[in-house]
Image (tube, rainbow, N blue to C red; front, top):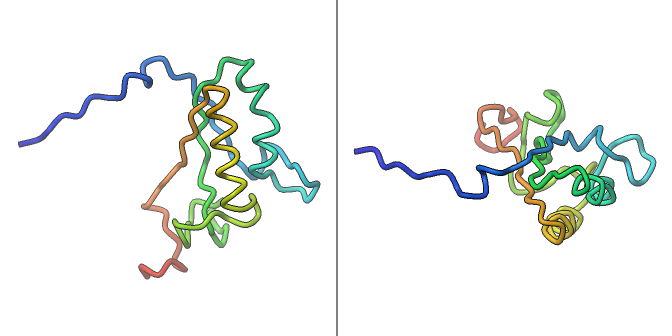
Length: 116
C-alpha cells in the first residue's frame, strides 16, 4: 500500500528564487558568494515577491562538480560562511516571510564522503 502525502499548503503559492551561493553575492570581497551576501539581499528578494529561496548545495565539498559532490552533509562549506551565518540567513529570511530550502542531492555524493 502506498500512502499519499499531499503537498504543504504554502507550496501552492510559493514564489521560488534559486540561488547558487558561490556566484550570488560576495560580502567579503574574496570573489566567492556567501551566506552573508545572500542575507544582505533579502530585502530585494522580498521586494520582488520571493517567498521561498532554494539554495544549491552549500555543504562541504571538494568542488569537483560545482559543490554537488558533497563530502559532508552535516557541515556547510567554509567558503560560504559558518553554521551561524547560515542560521542568521534562515532567521532573517523568516522575518521577511521567506522560506529557505537547502538542495540535497544524495546521488551526487563525493567519493571523499565516508560512505565510500
